[in-house]
Length: 203
Image 1: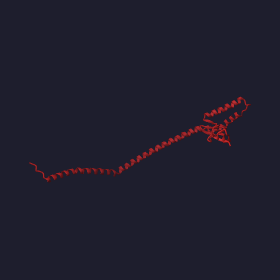
Image 2: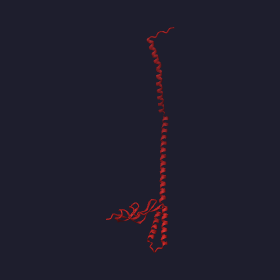
Image 3: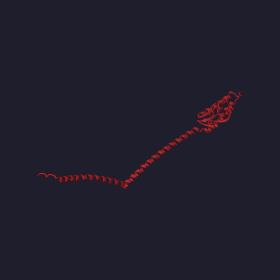
Image 4: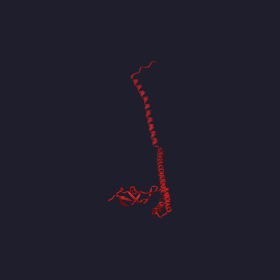
């Protein structure tokens, strides 16, 4: 049987049917988007999930704080150890300071005895005192004691104590003219300043 020719009305009906078939696809897409939004809302509205998220954040913050405290404690322990080592080194270097101060008058006496010996003193006496003085100075040198003898050097108030100022045109002002008593250092630290006479400008 031959198919009846289509009229404009038939064409319009066919077009509308096609549009109706396409609409469910668009509707399904909108439904899928709405379902996804609803799922996100359900997750965010889930109090248990929120509690877990808050707990995780709290634990992470606690871990960060603990790491920070551990680093600070390690740094403080290192500083304490360094300070203790420095104090021990200082104590080792300068533990003899009082003892050295007690020995210095003995050295001074031996030096004065040598100076005071006149021709009437025998060579044996002079040699004995000289050797005793040398032994004393050598023993002190082994423990870091050194003499300060600044004759002819510029006056240094950190190391010298001026006993007098004397005009002297032959020397620059503030030059040590004479050492009345030697000074001493213990490992670089002043134990006793040198007592000196200092030059000043003439006139």
